[in-house]
Image (cartoon, rainbow, N blue to C red; front, side):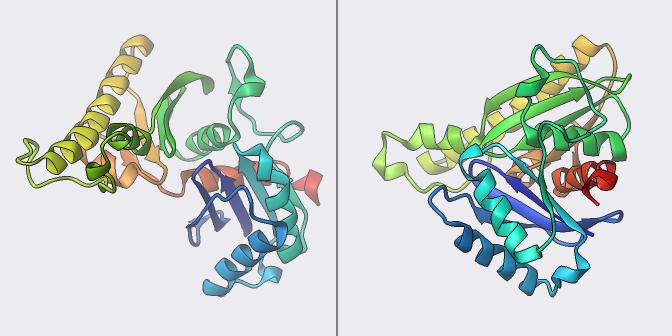
Length: 258
Protein backbone atom coordinates (compact mmCIF):
# COMPACT_ATOMS: atom_id res chain seq x y z
CA UNK A 1 0.00 0.00 0.00
CA UNK A 2 1.23 3.51 -0.81
CA UNK A 3 0.16 7.00 0.18
CA UNK A 4 -0.75 8.97 -2.95
CA UNK A 5 -1.04 12.76 -3.05
CA UNK A 6 -2.36 14.97 -5.86
CA UNK A 7 -1.75 18.69 -5.34
CA UNK A 8 -4.31 20.72 -7.27
CA UNK A 9 -4.98 24.43 -7.43
CA UNK A 10 -8.00 24.23 -5.13
CA UNK A 11 -7.65 20.94 -3.24
CA UNK A 12 -5.01 18.41 -2.30
CA UNK A 13 -6.44 14.92 -2.81
CA UNK A 14 -4.78 12.05 -0.99
CA UNK A 15 -5.37 8.48 0.04
CA UNK A 16 -3.90 5.06 0.67
CA UNK A 17 -3.95 2.90 -2.46
CA UNK A 18 -3.09 -0.71 -3.25
CA UNK A 19 -3.77 -3.14 -6.08
CA UNK A 20 -7.47 -3.22 -5.12
CA UNK A 21 -7.95 0.54 -5.36
CA UNK A 22 -8.09 3.33 -2.81
CA UNK A 23 -8.68 2.45 0.82
CA UNK A 24 -9.87 6.02 1.31
CA UNK A 25 -9.84 9.38 -0.50
CA UNK A 26 -9.66 12.67 1.40
CA UNK A 27 -9.45 16.32 0.33
CA UNK A 28 -7.83 19.27 2.08
CA UNK A 29 -7.59 22.86 0.85
CA UNK A 30 -4.52 23.90 -1.09
CA UNK A 31 -2.98 26.73 0.94
CA UNK A 32 0.18 28.20 -0.53
CA UNK A 33 1.23 29.82 2.76
CA UNK A 34 1.21 26.66 4.88
CA UNK A 35 4.49 25.39 6.29
CA UNK A 36 5.94 21.89 6.12
CA UNK A 37 4.82 21.29 9.71
CA UNK A 38 1.24 22.34 8.99
CA UNK A 39 1.00 19.98 6.03
CA UNK A 40 2.66 17.25 8.11
CA UNK A 41 -0.06 17.69 10.74
CA UNK A 42 -2.72 17.40 7.99
CA UNK A 43 -1.19 14.16 6.69
CA UNK A 44 -0.84 12.66 10.17
CA UNK A 45 -4.43 13.59 11.02
CA UNK A 46 -5.74 11.91 7.87
CA UNK A 47 -3.80 8.72 8.59
CA UNK A 48 -4.94 8.69 12.22
CA UNK A 49 -8.59 9.16 11.23
CA UNK A 50 -8.35 6.09 9.01
CA UNK A 51 -6.28 4.08 11.52
CA UNK A 52 -3.33 3.68 9.15
CA UNK A 53 0.12 3.22 10.68
CA UNK A 54 3.20 4.42 8.85
CA UNK A 55 4.67 0.89 8.88
CA UNK A 56 1.74 -0.21 6.71
CA UNK A 57 2.78 2.21 3.97
CA UNK A 58 5.51 1.21 1.53
CA UNK A 59 6.12 4.64 0.00
CA UNK A 60 4.54 7.78 -1.41
CA UNK A 61 3.98 9.27 -4.87
CA UNK A 62 2.99 12.89 -5.49
CA UNK A 63 1.60 14.63 -8.56
CA UNK A 64 1.36 18.40 -8.49
CA UNK A 65 0.29 21.36 -10.60
CA UNK A 66 1.27 23.84 -7.88
CA UNK A 67 5.08 23.98 -7.98
CA UNK A 68 5.26 26.57 -5.18
CA UNK A 69 4.27 23.97 -2.57
CA UNK A 70 5.33 20.67 -4.14
CA UNK A 71 8.59 20.43 -2.19
CA UNK A 72 6.91 21.59 1.03
CA UNK A 73 4.33 18.79 0.79
CA UNK A 74 7.02 16.25 -0.19
CA UNK A 75 9.07 17.05 2.91
CA UNK A 76 5.94 17.01 5.07
CA UNK A 77 4.99 13.54 3.79
CA UNK A 78 8.53 12.26 4.28
CA UNK A 79 8.56 13.61 7.84
CA UNK A 80 5.40 11.67 8.75
CA UNK A 81 5.89 8.49 6.69
CA UNK A 82 9.67 8.23 7.14
CA UNK A 83 9.77 6.69 3.65
CA UNK A 84 11.08 7.98 0.35
CA UNK A 85 8.58 10.28 -1.32
CA UNK A 86 8.73 10.64 -5.10
CA UNK A 87 7.27 13.43 -7.24
CA UNK A 88 5.87 12.59 -10.67
CA UNK A 89 8.07 14.36 -13.19
CA UNK A 90 11.33 13.93 -15.15
CA UNK A 91 13.04 10.63 -14.42
CA UNK A 92 9.84 8.83 -13.41
CA UNK A 93 8.70 6.04 -15.73
CA UNK A 94 5.02 6.18 -16.67
CA UNK A 95 4.75 3.92 -19.74
CA UNK A 96 2.66 6.63 -21.40
CA UNK A 97 3.40 7.54 -25.04
CA UNK A 98 2.59 11.25 -25.14
CA UNK A 99 2.06 12.58 -28.65
CA UNK A 100 1.91 16.28 -27.84
CA UNK A 101 3.82 19.21 -29.33
CA UNK A 102 5.77 19.44 -26.06
CA UNK A 103 5.20 16.33 -23.90
CA UNK A 104 7.03 17.90 -20.97
CA UNK A 105 4.29 20.50 -20.53
CA UNK A 106 1.58 17.93 -19.84
CA UNK A 107 0.34 18.29 -16.26
CA UNK A 108 1.28 15.53 -13.82
CA UNK A 109 -2.37 15.07 -12.88
CA UNK A 110 -3.31 14.40 -16.51
CA UNK A 111 -0.46 11.91 -16.83
CA UNK A 112 -1.69 10.02 -13.77
CA UNK A 113 -5.29 10.05 -15.05
CA UNK A 114 -4.20 8.61 -18.41
CA UNK A 115 -1.98 5.95 -16.83
CA UNK A 116 -4.91 4.80 -14.68
CA UNK A 117 -7.16 4.78 -17.72
CA UNK A 118 -4.74 2.48 -19.54
CA UNK A 119 -4.53 0.17 -16.53
CA UNK A 120 -8.24 -0.14 -15.78
CA UNK A 121 -10.30 0.77 -18.86
CA UNK A 122 -10.63 -0.07 -22.53
CA UNK A 123 -9.07 2.13 -25.22
CA UNK A 124 -9.80 4.45 -26.86
CA UNK A 125 -10.92 6.52 -23.91
CA UNK A 126 -11.56 10.05 -22.73
CA UNK A 127 -10.81 11.09 -19.16
CA UNK A 128 -12.74 14.09 -17.85
CA UNK A 129 -11.16 15.62 -14.74
CA UNK A 130 -13.40 18.24 -13.13
CA UNK A 131 -11.48 20.45 -10.75
CA UNK A 132 -10.52 24.11 -10.88
CA UNK A 133 -10.46 23.60 -14.64
CA UNK A 134 -12.28 20.89 -16.55
CA UNK A 135 -9.88 18.85 -18.66
CA UNK A 136 -10.55 16.19 -21.27
CA UNK A 137 -7.69 13.82 -22.12
CA UNK A 138 -7.80 11.49 -25.12
CA UNK A 139 -5.98 8.18 -25.48
CA UNK A 140 -6.43 6.48 -28.85
CA UNK A 141 -6.89 2.81 -29.77
CA UNK A 142 -3.09 2.40 -30.04
CA UNK A 143 -2.69 3.55 -26.41
CA UNK A 144 -1.17 6.90 -27.38
CA UNK A 145 -1.97 10.06 -25.45
CA UNK A 146 -2.92 12.29 -28.37
CA UNK A 147 -4.17 15.47 -26.67
CA UNK A 148 -7.32 16.92 -25.20
CA UNK A 149 -9.23 20.02 -24.16
CA UNK A 150 -9.22 22.49 -21.27
CA UNK A 151 -12.47 24.23 -20.28
CA UNK A 152 -13.20 26.75 -17.52
CA UNK A 153 -14.11 24.81 -14.40
CA UNK A 154 -17.68 24.83 -13.12
CA UNK A 155 -16.66 26.85 -10.07
CA UNK A 156 -14.82 29.39 -12.23
CA UNK A 157 -17.90 29.80 -14.42
CA UNK A 158 -20.15 30.36 -11.41
CA UNK A 159 -17.68 32.80 -9.83
CA UNK A 160 -17.50 34.78 -13.08
CA UNK A 161 -21.28 34.91 -13.27
CA UNK A 162 -21.68 36.23 -9.71
CA UNK A 163 -18.53 38.37 -9.45
CA UNK A 164 -20.30 41.67 -10.19
CA UNK A 165 -23.56 40.89 -8.43
CA UNK A 166 -23.11 40.93 -4.66
CA UNK A 167 -26.66 39.72 -4.02
CA UNK A 168 -26.02 36.59 -6.04
CA UNK A 169 -22.88 35.38 -4.29
CA UNK A 170 -22.70 32.08 -2.45
CA UNK A 171 -24.82 30.09 -4.90
CA UNK A 172 -24.26 26.35 -4.55
CA UNK A 173 -23.56 24.11 -7.52
CA UNK A 174 -26.66 21.95 -7.37
CA UNK A 175 -29.60 21.08 -9.57
CA UNK A 176 -32.75 23.18 -9.12
CA UNK A 177 -36.14 21.50 -9.10
CA UNK A 178 -36.75 22.46 -12.74
CA UNK A 179 -34.47 23.14 -15.69
CA UNK A 180 -36.57 26.22 -16.44
CA UNK A 181 -35.88 28.31 -13.34
CA UNK A 182 -38.62 30.35 -11.70
CA UNK A 183 -36.28 32.77 -9.88
CA UNK A 184 -32.84 34.26 -10.45
CA UNK A 185 -30.94 31.84 -8.23
CA UNK A 186 -32.55 28.75 -9.78
CA UNK A 187 -31.97 30.19 -13.26
CA UNK A 188 -28.28 30.56 -12.48
CA UNK A 189 -28.00 27.11 -10.92
CA UNK A 190 -29.71 25.57 -13.94
CA UNK A 191 -27.63 27.54 -16.40
CA UNK A 192 -24.27 26.67 -14.84
CA UNK A 193 -25.05 23.01 -14.19
CA UNK A 194 -26.77 22.12 -17.46
CA UNK A 195 -24.46 24.20 -19.63
CA UNK A 196 -21.53 22.30 -18.09
CA UNK A 197 -23.23 18.94 -18.66
CA UNK A 198 -24.16 19.93 -22.22
CA UNK A 199 -20.63 21.13 -22.94
CA UNK A 200 -19.22 17.78 -21.83
CA UNK A 201 -21.71 15.87 -23.99
CA UNK A 202 -20.85 18.09 -26.95
CA UNK A 203 -17.10 17.75 -26.46
CA UNK A 204 -17.37 13.96 -26.35
CA UNK A 205 -19.41 13.97 -29.58
CA UNK A 206 -16.83 16.09 -31.36
CA UNK A 207 -13.84 14.09 -30.10
CA UNK A 208 -15.44 10.84 -31.24
CA UNK A 209 -16.24 12.43 -34.59
CA UNK A 210 -12.58 13.35 -35.05
CA UNK A 211 -11.38 9.93 -33.88
CA UNK A 212 -13.91 8.14 -36.05
CA UNK A 213 -14.88 5.69 -33.30
CA UNK A 214 -16.69 5.40 -29.99
CA UNK A 215 -14.78 5.83 -26.75
CA UNK A 216 -14.91 4.76 -23.13
CA UNK A 217 -15.53 7.91 -21.09
CA UNK A 218 -14.36 8.20 -17.47
CA UNK A 219 -14.93 11.18 -15.19
CA UNK A 220 -13.12 12.10 -11.99
CA UNK A 221 -12.42 15.16 -9.88
CA UNK A 222 -14.16 17.02 -7.10
CA UNK A 223 -17.07 18.36 -9.14
CA UNK A 224 -17.72 15.31 -11.32
CA UNK A 225 -20.40 13.88 -9.02
CA UNK A 226 -22.41 17.09 -9.31
CA UNK A 227 -22.30 17.41 -13.10
CA UNK A 228 -21.86 13.98 -14.72
CA UNK A 229 -25.26 12.55 -13.59
CA UNK A 230 -26.89 15.27 -15.69
CA UNK A 231 -24.96 14.38 -18.86
CA UNK A 232 -26.74 12.40 -21.56
CA UNK A 233 -23.70 10.41 -22.58
CA UNK A 234 -22.73 7.23 -20.73
CA UNK A 235 -19.87 8.25 -18.46
CA UNK A 236 -18.16 6.18 -15.76
CA UNK A 237 -17.57 8.00 -12.47
CA UNK A 238 -14.26 7.05 -10.85
CA UNK A 239 -13.32 9.30 -7.92
CA UNK A 240 -10.18 7.23 -7.28
CA UNK A 241 -8.80 7.40 -10.83
CA UNK A 242 -5.90 9.78 -10.28
CA UNK A 243 -4.72 8.12 -7.08
CA UNK A 244 -4.89 4.72 -8.76
CA UNK A 245 -2.74 6.16 -11.54
CA UNK A 246 -0.15 7.27 -9.00
CA UNK A 247 -0.13 3.73 -7.59
CA UNK A 248 0.47 2.24 -11.04
CA UNK A 249 3.31 4.71 -11.63
CA UNK A 250 4.80 3.95 -8.23
CA UNK A 251 4.85 0.24 -9.05
CA UNK A 252 6.54 0.91 -12.41
CA UNK A 253 9.32 2.70 -10.53
CA UNK A 254 9.43 0.41 -7.52
CA UNK A 255 12.86 -1.11 -8.20
CA UNK A 256 14.29 2.38 -8.58
CA UNK A 257 12.79 3.50 -5.28
CA UNK A 258 13.79 0.51 -3.21
